[in-house]
Image (cartoon, rainbow over the protein chains, first blue to last red):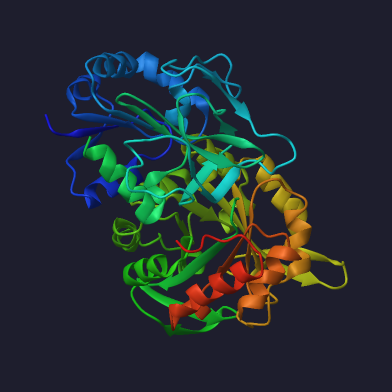
Length: 198
Length: 255
């Protein structure tokens, strides 16, 4: 199958991700069917809203499908809460474990800055990245989130807001971005095109 | 650094973009889908589509317009005007909106804010407040139904309640300044921006670059919205961003 699975787990709105992939001419479908996810060529896990909403992934069988696909080398992109879920957990919902693909836990912004962090902010590229190929450092992308991933050894792009945090992490065929590439104009479309070409 | 956002607003009536002066004397300025794309290419950070006919004629938002506009727009896209229920909001989201803006319906039933936020996330819920200065009471009063009905609600306390109920942003329009091109109401904007933690979008009164600089510096706005000044020459959006950049205000430029 050549199709990209956009995982719908009842949190937020997967439509804008589909719209962007449609624009890029990619075969894609919004799905909550574990079998579809298991056989997809690539998987995108979007997500906005509350970390606790990711609990439905384990209940629905989608988590097992995702873990299995990742084990077989399927390229995987987590966006926003989808990124956070790839870590061990979040202060937002301590009772909900993350997938733990990356080590670390999502934390609040410090009290001296307004939260949520909403708007266009700049990326600082920290390491060579397949996802950011052709995208210059200091590019602007669109964020909207209240929790963040600290800078880790897997961080490939940082952002500054009340201190540095991880805007993107990458390891092998696993990719995650805190910002919304589907809402980040030409820079975001470039990134999605890179993901589709992996 | 987090930048100050410049938001282009398309006031839409029956599928066409119009702009009123103080909500009256509408004139036609084009196709929403084309205008939204042109604004995005010119450097707008976001697009808001307000169905201005919806609130008083009680019509559903034109989903087809939303769908056509969203298809080629890859920056945040907010739709407002006449959304009264969770189901209506859901339809607008599935047509491609990233955020919905609610005004009259939220004042009539504030639990609507929470219900939409629980389903789609707070970042997707913008509460629009149309505020008018009340000299006697030395405050600003919230109005509904496109500025037709006074509510008796204080705009600042309503913004705080909206935040506590789950709103992700406040879109604050000064009815006194709307359509005048005499500058944003910095006092109103600051009063609201300083009393909530969520972003405040200033609206009403934009006439030139200095007005934007003033509302960011003095009004503490996180974003500023304008309609008519962007419609008749897109180079002006670039000029605006360059001017703000040269004044040291962080903006997405070049983008």
